View 1 (tube, rainbow, N blue to C red):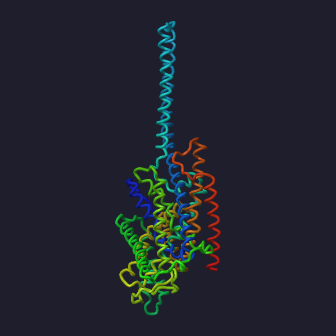
View 2: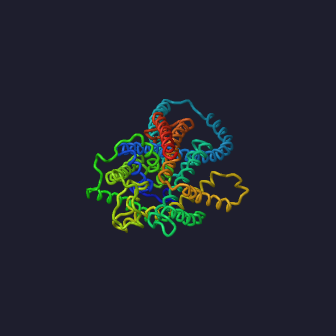
View 3: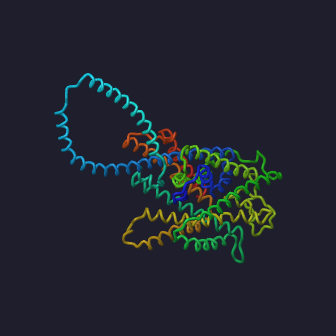
Length: 516
């Protein structure tokens, strides 16, 4: 998935702060206002803050695991070097032993009875030797502590899948990649459903094609576009990253401003009309909250290039606080703008005369502005997912293909690499299109992806990596991690796993009663 530069370049913590923020805040946040409209303002904010805090905890666990992985790799390299030196030294020592024995015999024969002066010299030497050893011991402990911290420094990029194999074995490795692949398929399915839905909203139907049926025409065009590109290997250019970044942030800021203007004009909901606390709809916000804070699979990529890696926990904590403020602001203004509107859907941009027609909060918040007075603004917000998701879809599809090639090794020696690449490329790019053909319900896809695969990547795997990495460190090296997370204890391990089970049950129950 996404990550930092792979060419050896570095950046400052300020740059990393901005980079991490933009990596976390993705298109999934557009589904948060809909979840808030169901769960209520108070419950939504409390739950969003809780998920953000839990996401921060599990992020510190992955940082901790990353530092332990670097320590193990450094020590394995030193063990190999020392082993080679020992082999060479043993050969040299065997050759010198005979000469040393002869010299010792000659020296012993020349020894004389010690004098008083000799005794004083020997006594002074012994005292100095004791003092020197004490000082050396202090210096060694001091330098040893610094050296130990250096060994835990995050210098090598070790992906979460590699950490799973290192600490959890082959079974954990395969489980993680299985969960990651499911998450990527869900991610792509969300993109595949969002792009044609957006295009259908903008253009509307024509001739015999209704607004609903034209969706499948755009889905077909989308498949024809992403399928061939997914066969190749290429990375997102820096300029494309900046363009996508600017477009996304402008769209988010624009939605907040337009909502505030709508409220200021006296059209918003009063505090009594805004839903506050609906515990029965808690599951509605769970999946989308997980999806909105998901960044764990990319942690090694964006932390390793940081030039000075002190206070990484603080850096991540500040980022999560800022992300929560951004999400909370968007959701609060959406509720006070459209929380009391009863109109089920907004007029599409293709058929409206751009007289703003408010509607209930939609599955993606951008759809609340399809009939905005300014055609340019309405089209920009409506097409926002098309610009960002089409490029991301290809990149994520290539990432998914590479993970499939790494996980599925059945008959790889008998099948040519070209056939395998083409097969898995088409699989990764077209199966999500098939899912989007079966359902265009973005909220359902977000909830399933976040509630199941996202739960495993964000909560379960980090807890297991933290526990078993610290256990390996103590059992094999008899030391503790100087960069240990403050949450690495049994209480938080059990808490996270218990919350995961409860949330999984709630999410499953919600999906069953909603879509049965």
